[in-house]
Length: 258
Image (cartoon, rainbow, N blue to C red; front, side, top):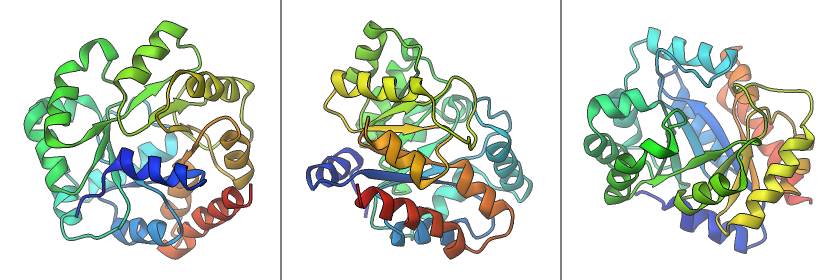
């Protein structure tokens, strides 16, 4: 059964929780076991990467994960098929590139996501000015379109992003591609504060979050965090699903202690 993204995150926030959304690359061998381990470790939602051959916003780790998944034959259809019989108990958010959705057709792609139990979608390379048709198709299918906001976004654009985003607003901590980083920038905190002032939607910060300290620091300026590359690096290096999820559990514990 599909769990509604925005309603779930709002309810968790109302209960006083800081939100935690880990990422897993769909299509890798054992990826659904990782997804379930993330849910057991305390994830509030889980982002699922649907691999694409030219992932422009992905850093080296996410690119490697996508390529490995493509090499073993992963497709959007195969990934969504695996999800149909999965009960994670938390909302699932697809992250992929506009080319895949456009090739399938906005309506068909949105419907396929919903049938796979997906309740949110992120198309990071689809400009705000060109996303209206996708947003409408996704809304009709019951899929929340999550929009990204960057540190350099001017106030008027930030307001438009917040007005049109659904599920949550994704604050990008740095200009650049995804990837674990040693420290968070001042710009990330500033963006979190700006987003919180502009919207009542849940605000989550991502790109570079790789430790409990990062998560706690950013959660002071936002409602929670998204963590991706640090987890995928563990998975690609051969750690078992429960070992990969240990980092999720550590971050969950740190956030709950704040």
